Image 1 (cartoon, rainbow, N blue to C red):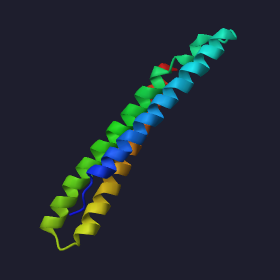
Image 2: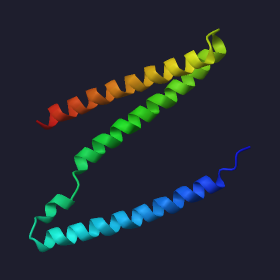
Image 3: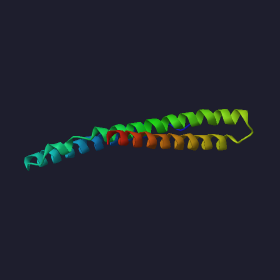
Image 4: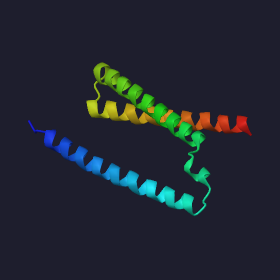
Length: 113
C-alpha cells in the first residue's frame, strides 16, 4: 500500500506557507488602500452572492448523493453495468438539482423585484 503521510505533510507545509504569505500581502494591500483614502466598503462581501452559491452547491451535493443512492439501487436490481448505473444517476440527479436551483433563484429574484 502506498504511504500517503509524506504527501499530506508536504501539502500542509506548503499550504501553510502560502496562507501566511497571502494573508500578509492582503493585509498590506488593504492598509495601503486605506491610507490612500479608498472606501472601505469594497472589503465587505455581498452576502446574497454567497447564499446563492451555498444554495447551489448544497442542492448539487444533495442531487449527487441521491444519484449515488439510485445508482446503487439500479446496479443491484438490474443487469446494467455498475459504471453505467452510477454515472447515469449521478449526472441525472445532479442536473436535476441544478435546474431546481435555477428555478428557485429565478422565483426568488422575481419575488424581490
